[in-house]
Length: 114
Length: 117
Image (cartoon, rainbow over all chains, first blue to last red; front, side):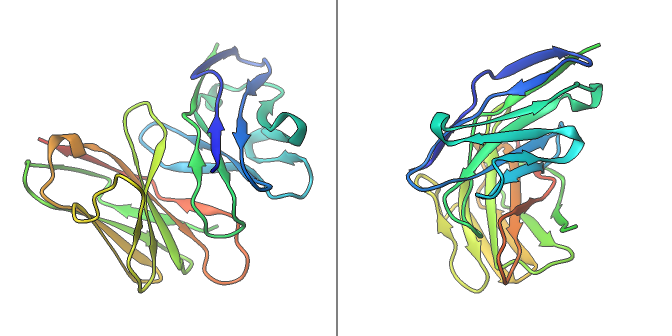
């Protein structure tokens, strides 16, 4: 069975500071990993995905994540936070390449301090 | 890019009535659509997987007779909440995967907020 743990339900960073959102996964097979962002009262938007190619994945809006098998982690980072980054971020895992169900973490709410 | 729409975006209904939510893939065909519900400040929980032309597969604990799913075409899936009660109030989100070939991404709709009075 697959699962995702997001450490820290709330993260606050100052504008211009590094953003680090943590995600650890559990999977019985090589996983496919995703980060999604959700703005208030909206659906989810894909930030980036790992599908067994390069371990460092670059996404939209300056975000990137690194797949570390030894640590079973897929942390999301951004060098310099912007006010518009304030949102809820979800890490998700899938065990199948294709139209297979996603298991989501509990989410991390990112607040940007002016 | 692939766009998924949901209608309505918000709905308020009385307890005991039924509500239908539509999920459409606007510019692609989706053999598989997924329905999630999200409680306030919580994660998305998969309710069911819907495949075009066949019965939906429900996750454990989801009542199939209460949450009716129909996937009649490659661009439309509907979720009907039957005899809705206040505890059914939630944010319902659908997603769709591209049909044919290799895909590794689900595209999410904007969600439907259901409030049952």
